[in-house]
Structures are given as structure tokens and as C-alpha cells.
Length: 466
Picture 1: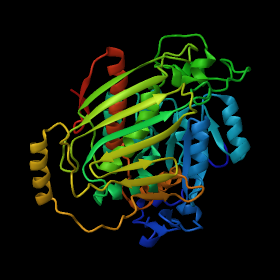
Picture 2: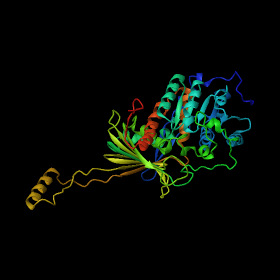
Picture 3: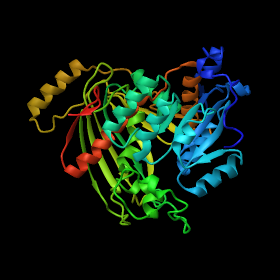
Picture 4: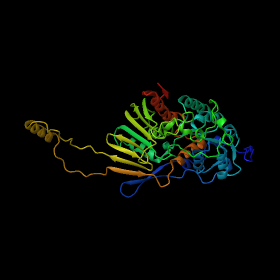
């Protein structure tokens, strides 16, 4: 056991504090600044003091230290008052890499329980394969440790309900790691919707397309990887025996044993952002289709998936329809976008911008009388002139407004800020277990609909398939 084993009983629990006493420190205002023309810059203030005492520091254990796990840690540690004290992974090389980055005194292990149960660990990051989410999250919650859980919340809907129950019993913050709910861009889109800038919402379309091998999950496989430096038995714990297969370990998203397909991996982001913008709990009808069109590399996950979703009218929004797409063989190069269409305009959310395009309905509807005889045309022209008299010309107002995030903006940072605020002073998280399952459920059922070739019904309130 290393010297940072947390045996110092003088360490105070910041979880028991009423807060750090400065409401202004934790406020998260959005500042909108007008720049040249019709472009606006969105910004956000710094939210944490620059110095914390050792007793106020949030010590983190991170479980799953692949690319996502290491990236999550890097972002989390940008927030003041945080420190990585334990790392867990099933591949020795990743644990070695963690020590290279964060120091030789970092505690490392293959056993996630060893990391969770360390006395100096205050909170747990989980960035593992989807099939381990439920077990590790529940273990951390039962230990009373706040949890950052990568999306989708779990591999199945039933597992999601188990995590929500554990979250309820633990009474500590759990946040699901789909960061768009913390984005200033999505907050701006929400404000534009609430201000009635596009009228009544009726249609949403979103896509997340890719073309590269890495984008299509053909991750690098070390030639030296084997069953000695990879804990293969633990990785497949509870599954039928299978000889070590490095593709199944390093390219796990390609296989239903460990992942949730493109819908579970990427539709979840689109659902999360949409649900925050519109203040909705989700669709009630789901249809998915697609297939394996290009990446014939042994995977059982489709590389082209499309989904159609019916959102019923609620107290917070009118009825509308959603169309989502992922294409891993997009010859145009790929990209991501979400577009919200209303009766009076459109909101287009790109990687770093929100564009509002407004459509002004003409005062006079125009005439379609070419197929009438002369007498009827004259009759209608008189009627039209009486009903819509000539009006004085009106000024043409701008119909396009572009809002952009500052250079280098990272919504993942804001997502971690939200979680740490919840840990320190009891603030609500923006994406708790129920929110996470309401985003994951429709994505997971998209896969079911695709495989069963039929539409499915979903109860977004109860978070259950009907």
C-alpha cells in the first residue's frame, strides 16, 4: 500500500460541510456579448477559488483508464481543488501510463473495489466498458462515494433502474457523463426556445457521422497485449469462457457483449442535449433501422443506424418528431449537428456555434388563381384587395443570428464543475440517474427495434418499455 492510503483520520469530510460559504463562487452566469454584425460571444465565469486546503480537496478514484478515462481525469483535474489518488484498469500498460502522467505515488490496481474502498477516496469516476457500469456504480454508491458515470448510464434498462435505486439510497450525487447538458451552447438554444424565437417546435433532426478508422472504433491494438498483461478473466466475469481476443478488449464498442452500439454511444448525446433544451422526458414511440455497410471487421454493431421518434405533447412542449442518424462510412468526412425546426424559425447547433434563423410570415398570403376563369379571377382579386389592402413598405430586420462559444471552450469542464458543486454544497446535478436513463432508454430501444424490425413503445415517465 502506498503512502497515500488515506489513514490520516484528521482529514475532514467536506461532504459534511454546509458549503464553502460563497454563493458567488458557485454561480454560473452566462454572459452574452455582442460582437460585430450579428455574431454573439457566449462566455462563462470562473467558478472555483484558486486555492483549496488539503482538507477541502476532492480526492478522486478513476476506474477505466483508456482514452476516455484518462481524458475525463485530465478535464476533472482542471477544476481547482481536485486530485487523482487512485486509478484502476485491466491493462497494465494503462496503469503504467497513469503513473507517468500523475506520479509514481498514484495507487493503481486491477480491482475496482480496492480503489473504491480506499479511505482517502472521496468520489469515483467510471469510464469503463458499458457492461461494467452497473456493478461498479452500485458498488461506489453503496460505499457512499459520489459517482461520475460515463454514458450511457448502463447497458440495459433494468440495470439503469438498479443504479437509480442505489443512487436514491446513497443520497450522494451521481452524474451521467453526457456533457451537452452542461454546455453554454445548449443553454442558449434552450433560452431561444423558451423565448419563442422559433414559434412552436415541430421537428428535430440530428446526426453524428464519421469516416475515419478510429472514429469507427478501430482502435490501436498493442502487439504485445496478452492474457498476462490484460486481466481477461475479470473483463469477462460472468460471461461464457472465451479465449483472449484483443479486438474484444481494445475495440469493445464493436461488440454487443460489452457495448451498446452506435445508438448507445452517440444517440445518447443527441437525446441528452435535446431533452435539456426542450425540457422533455422523452419519446413514446421508437423505430430504428440500419445495418453493417462498410466496416466488415468482425463486429456485430451496425455502422449505419437511423432512428425515428414521436414526442407527445406535454405541459412543457408541443408534439414533435425527431430523426437521428449515425453513419460511420460518410464519404463527406462526417460531422455532428442538431437542428430544431419551429413554425417561425430554426435553431442549428454546430460544434461551437448556435445559429438562429427566423422566418417572417408575409402579411399577405398571395394568390393561386391561375386555374380559374377570367370572371372568377377578377372576383378573387377584388376580394383579396379588400381583405389585404396595400401596406407601406416595412424595414427588413436581420433573420440570422450566430452565437458562438469562446475559443477553447470545453463543455466537459462545465459538466465536472456541476458534479463538484453538487458534491461540495448540495447543488442539483444537471444529469442524474433518471435523466441519464431517459436519454439512454430510447437509444437502447433503437437497437431492439432495429434487430426486431418493428416499432416500440416507451413510457418516458416510468422509464419502461411498454
